[in-house]
Figure 1 (cartoon, rainbow, N blue to C red):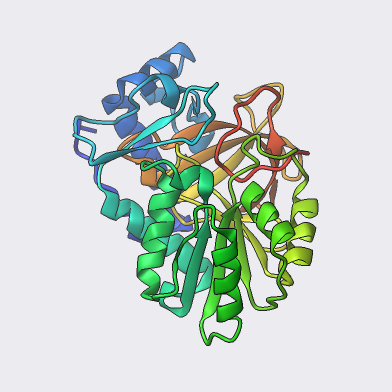
Figure 2 (figure 1 turned 180 degrees about the horizontal axis):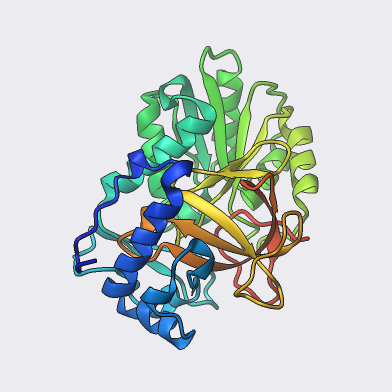
Length: 328
């Protein structure tokens, strides 16, 4: 494949042609991404040796902290940066076209939950909103705008105002969804309990060192009790990915059509764990075609039904990142 000759139409991707598209992306990134190519060669993998997705090397997520991970020569429109902590170096992910990112996020959300125009979107994302380059904030802000509701909006630390808004919306004809980072949702549910049976809650982000880690079930039970709803969902995403996966109450994440998850063996990162066995989460994200689509995360999970996956936690000593993780 000639350099700089690739274009991926994310709207046209489906399960039937995912592997063919992913292999095209691999060849392009191998030729046009010097960081990824060096990594492949360090693993003694050349582009000629990659015939199937089982052969593709995955770039460790930590590379986004130390290098500009880009395929081809282009000027970023903006750069997303992970929330991280003061003690940790943050990841940076360059964005070629923010409009493409927004559209891909919207498609993933609406595939799972229906049109944004049917919603009021409220957001409690303090550790992200305090930054001006969070991919999550960009996505949720796009959702707020897409809802076209004057009631939609962000709440930084004003939990009282959020409580009042929810009381006001309990009789709304629209669906109401509250997006929140885990620790902030728990703080809110404890300080301002409410009975809102139809409220939809989207849990994203971890504890960020603000509270002790909890298993998913405990978090959800506390939110159900404090907010008076059983409609607790989860989002799996991170700075290094442009696609997302969503989970309903069962805790099994369903990736968007531009994303696939594979579970690598704990002891051999070049083989894959059997369905139902725990291992490290590898992600193929075709929305990353201008950066790197093959990411080795520090998360632990299991595959279910060959498509859905479960997040169990993170590797020991892995950074406290922004994705939605619970301890095992």
